[in-house]
Length: 189
Image (tube, rainbow, N blue to C red; front, side, top):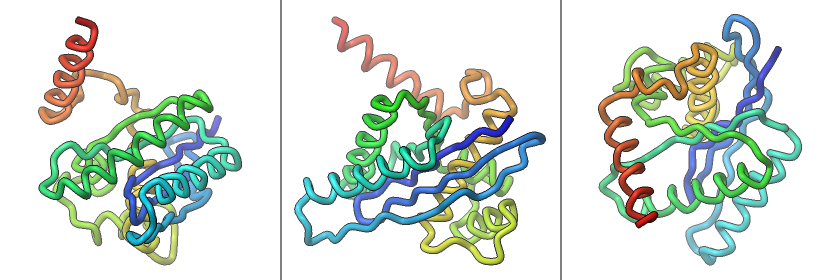
């Protein structure tokens, strides 16, 4: 049985989207990859709407069984974090609309899954993505390669049964999970 995973490297200026299929023995193959781009000169509502429409079209055509999104929870550039959060919200809403399960993976988790090192640089990630998928070239720009890395990370972790296993969470993931639980508990009060 094969599974399709849509990987999303969320961003407001460049949003990487890659679809892979994973089959027996964690063998992955490329279905599609793209980078959705918007101009910083455009209105925010238009940029978010355009990216959302493009992702919705991709969901309808690729019919993924799962969506994997890069989770960014610590960054110095607040403006960049806001764009990532806004696009992540759009993807979450679309996942809800189409009843597709969503999985969040940290950048270090993705790098470790694809390269073996949570500190790998963009070039190393791109090289391994190309190698894993049997591509002659690294998908460009880096957002495209990153979206495929996110999808591969999820596919491999899911195949290994480790996606929701709390024992395999990194300290950062445990801290994030604890913060999410605290936020949910405070909303109920």
